[in-house]
Amino acid sequence: MLHLHVVVRARKDASAVEATLQRYYPDWRWKVDTVKGERRPDWILGMARELFRDSEALWKVLLLGKRSYPFGRRVKAVEDWTVVNVGKAEVRNARLVEILDAIEAGRAADRLRVAFRGGVFELRAGDPMTEDKDADVLIRWGRFAESLREVTGTGVPAGSYVSVRVPGSPPEETLYDSQGSPVGVLRTPERGEPSFEVLKEEPDPFDLEAALKVNSEVLDKVVERSLEFLRSTVRDVDVLVVPVSGGKDSAVSLSLAVKAADELDLDVLAVHVDTGFDLGTETALEVCEALGVDMEKVDVSGDIKRGLSTKGLPTHDDRWCTGVKLGGVKRVLKDVEGEPVLVVGDRDAESRRRRLRPPEHENRILSVREVNPIKGWSAAEVLMTCFREGLPLSPLYELGFYRLGCSICPSLTAWERALLERYGDELGFEFFLDDELEDLVG
Image (tube, rainbow, N blue to C red; front, side, top):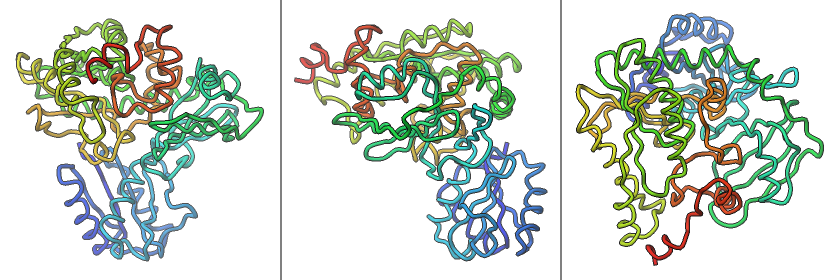
């Protein structure tokens, strides 16, 4: 299956895009077409529509220069494809990094699209909530309003909200109510105190059940598209090996793997690498039981503790713990009978490195082919799929976690640490610096 289909105005524009893709997307399957030099915006859109109509690509992007771009905003969603203004007179005039930025903005647009109608929100409708390609859309529901007030001293009324999370220093989440109004901003630094700024005194939260009904059709399409991609990439293997952390992304990836395996008569094996500091071990087991999948648990807690005593806590510059966890997966892969493929729940919104990685590639560390079926999903789409399918979710998500991993992870924000401090005893989680850990790292 084609990964990326780009359309531009003329052949010289195509040459610039091809040079960009060769440099930044070397392992992707891509295609570049032109509209034969057409300059009239309405004709360009019509010709692009024809080119994209029969395209099987996962992402479809029309890149235009300012001379031909017909819209007011830089990124415009049209059906299942996106139009992006590169910011120069013609695409050929842009630097390669500017073309890359435009392609990335176009690929991000679908997962960032939300429309507010009739008191609910619709995913993949309307225009992107932001043009920031590093952003993500998620849902805040249940006990979130309670935890927000407990940790920051202020907050919003109980209910459900759409949140747009933008990484930065600090990362910020803007909450939106059922009217599409921004109601507050949560700032979550890595260190220091999390804070919440109220923007609307009497917000109108949306009804989660109503939103699930409204988004049923689009979620069906998102799931089916990922299944179509997954089926096309795993037909020639014997076993789908799915690392499960207890997080939402690995839960949905395992669900997709089970569906694909049932259709293709393949085996599925879930792998959980237990570091001794995982926040999702119990949930990982619950997800596997719900889906009827065997879970192989690999205990690397001894290696982690030795690393803590010799190297200290993992940092952004030295994530030595990742190598330990990958070693646990490698142990399982070595004993798999038949040809395996790794099905991993990586998503574009998580980091630039993951975003530039193709949706199927050779995992050189583990020497196995890897597939990322939810690469283009938003966190909101992942969460709502979990709700619809009844997949177990860690209670930490409802309280306000964005990602679930280990309690010693350097990516934990001050907000997530505060949640562990406040709710850790209630939920059975130890805070990331318990007495034993303090002894280990001195």
